[in-house]
Length: 114
Length: 242
Image: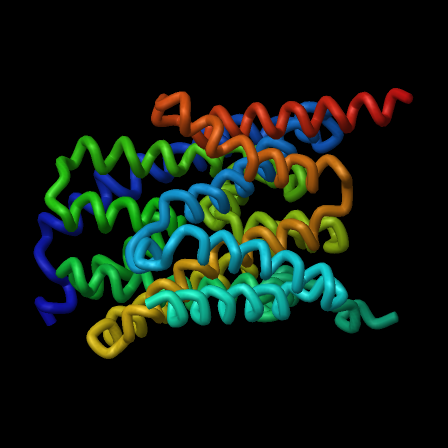
């Protein structure tokens, strides 16, 4: 049982170093968002910024790949990403087709180059 | 019409429809696979299974969890880890601000919005923004809670599965699941963007991030995201005024 829980110090670290610094931005959003009127013009801008940041997260993973993804050469990562988008456009805007296509290019490229 | 025949007749129904909606989007399945990778990483860096599933349920943001795992697992200081996690989480603020006014009705108490606020991360946000407008206002909070429980429940399971499979997963599997994040975020956000502004914001965010990295500020995403979002919004306003 104790191997499931691990040591308490690590769990406290999770709360203080992981949960709190992360959740605080949701709390700030809660405080700012609970009073704003749904028709407020500023919400259109906020949505644009939120969507743009998703674009940033996408690019961040491509240029600074985490963990095992770093073992895939940069040209292969970008080729797979572009291939996925092109396949998505060609196959009637199918997200599934795009994701599968991108993964096949990624794995094929990695296998071919190593 | 019998009232019970309406699919939105009760909060329980709305909650159930939210849970079902979680399993109708490909994002849940790609996130499931991504969290197999997060669970495996937690195993390899010697964190306990409880630690791994609590991180998924309470942090509930895959990039922050990977930063936390690698920072603590590689012996980095707690302060460095906390700062890196917090910088990655700023993106949650505009998502929460954009969603909450859509959920609130005339009788909504603030505390009703606490759980939906916690569920906000890219997957739940993207699906909520897409689906909530077609949900009756008084059922929206229950619907988003169902959606959040569905997605979070599935990924908590996959964190534990990934943790236990870590020893037998091939290294290529890790690369493949981590690559799901950028490609599925791109395609689902693109397919959910009804307005030119949303597509422009997404494209500019992708292009601006490497430029912001050159500035060496440590808050690349904040700078690139605000700049890209503001330009997309300005274009939207200019087109509307013509």
